[in-house]
Length: 160
Image: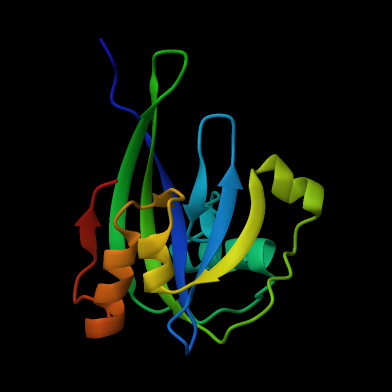
């Protein structure tokens, strides 16, 4: 019998530059490697905007990002080796920006401890063409939808 996992609140940024490129973080771990949107877990006492600004400063070096509307919410539950499950609920926000060179506010050792091994600006065509894992899996289509139609009125609930 498995119990329902508690869902860790996570915030992520869809950082889009004027050339319609999206900033992605390359992760490498023992059980998964691929590319995700920058962001991370909220800490006690933080609202989503506070947590996202902190995460972006740590990961990208951008201290005061403009945070737009929420775009989508994704619930992820993964099995752990102990037989239990861990879960997180990610809320992704639109963060329009200029293209910049990523200058993390964390040391290289701190980045590696979190599995972060690189950063890159990607177009939708590049995301569609890659054989690398992207999370969420439908990221190219989600980004294309935002570029074509803007932010949804209400955040979309997505899987994967």
